[in-house]
Image 1: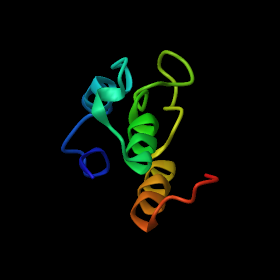
Image 2: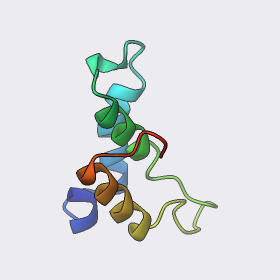
Image 3: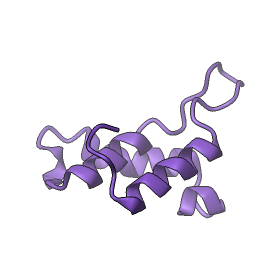
Image 4: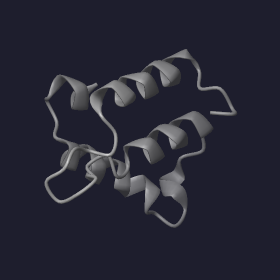
Length: 76
């Protein structure tokens, strides 16, 4: 994933996901797992405070990726 390997910034990933999440029609995304992943990534650049740590650290993002790849449980 580009975010974890550093090839894209959190801001870039947030803006990419925002294109679908903020679209009134969901950007045409019909797959529930893809929608779940997009909503996890939208806001990935948020911090606890202005210069504080991110709300979601790399370990949590890795967990989300593992869950997505394994076929996200519906109750997640």
